[in-house]
Amino acid sequence: MCNISFIKNMFEMFVVILLYLTCIFARRFPEEDYAGGYFDSQYARTKTALEKLEHAPQWVPNWPDSAVKMGQVSGVALDTSGLLLVFHRATNSWDLNTFTDRNVYQGIGDPPIAEPTILVFNETGDLLDSWGQNLFYIPHGITVDNKGNVWVTDVALHQVFKFTPDNRIKPAMVLGEKFIPGDDDEHFCKPSAVAVHSSGDFFVADGYCNTRIVKFAADGTKILQWGKRFGDGPFVLKVPHALALAEDRGELCAADREHGRLACFRADSGAFSVAFRHWLVGPRLFSLAYAPVHGGRLYIVNGPALGGGVPVRGYAIDYTSGKLIQTFAPDDGFSNPHDIAVTPDGSAVYVAELNPPRVVRFWSEPAASATRVAGDARVAAVASVAAVASSNVTHVTATATAIDEGAWWGAWSGARGGAAGGALAALGAALLLALCRARSRGKHAREPLLS
Image (cartoon, rainbow, N blue to C red; front, top):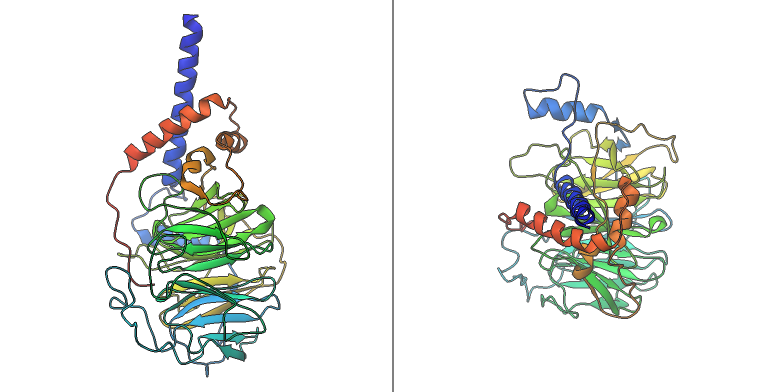
């Protein structure tokens, strides 16, 4: 009996160690073993890594029509016909004086932007339409659903708007209270992005102040939310800045901007699925888009970081393997990219920049042959940990799918080849959380104001 108890204890200890290693690998990334092994500079290391990626898609110069003037370009989105919608701030801008320290917009009392803030371009860069005048103050995110409805967020108004195809003047839905920041069911605080499921359900990244993702039914009824500012685990977000749905995989992915990571969750329940990171992307990841080509690809843009260290570029990630496979940037380089959109076939990629204010287009052959995967340019992929996640997902209605407390163990064993019972899952999860928390204590940097 004593031997059985000893063996059981040793097995449980092994499981805990294994889980702790999962925590380590979720936060650290493998150092690529390039030829020669060592380099004298970060420049040489970065140059070698970039050379191992395919430089595609290709930049399209002189796009769009240079006669069209834009302010800070905060968002880009494609509609079902392939037209590009550009959301820009015209004469307004977001700087250090735009908000009070309580996130209240300083320009209350000023009129909204008088110029059209939404511009519609075709693939050749011709301006076909413009609208959105006298509606917004500090535009941020934009998306178009499969019915042609346009969804936008305004961080000054702390609101989310839905416009139908037949009415671009009066919104069909408004969520949030005008100019009033908050963190309850009726308020947002600088909401950053919207993603709309084909079912009509939609997700809002309430990014800057509340660090949460909120799921709504098509009629605007709140279903659930997840995300927290402090602590440990995959649900700790620091500016969830952009959202992308991978419907063929049943997942919603977010650009966790100030953590430099891409985090994916189950679209039905909010359970954590996987996260991607890479040292070449750096500490800030601004936006992402998904295309269901070649088994699924995620397109991302990083952003400038204090002290530099990595180039500001776009990258394509293979969804299945979690590897960087492509990189792209205009010949004159990116300065401050803010959003990205991609066609379903991956043939065209559009990037919005705040400064200089512009939209950059990239193009490649549609449905091209499978791209070479750089084996030593891996993105760290983290297996799902739904048991740890369950306490961080708030279900508001009974329509939300409950998270299986032991489901994380099945995901881990499937990904890593492990095998064990659900009884150890709860113990392992609790110990993992404690170990991760002890390991990760430290200072939380203040969120940058500019975006």
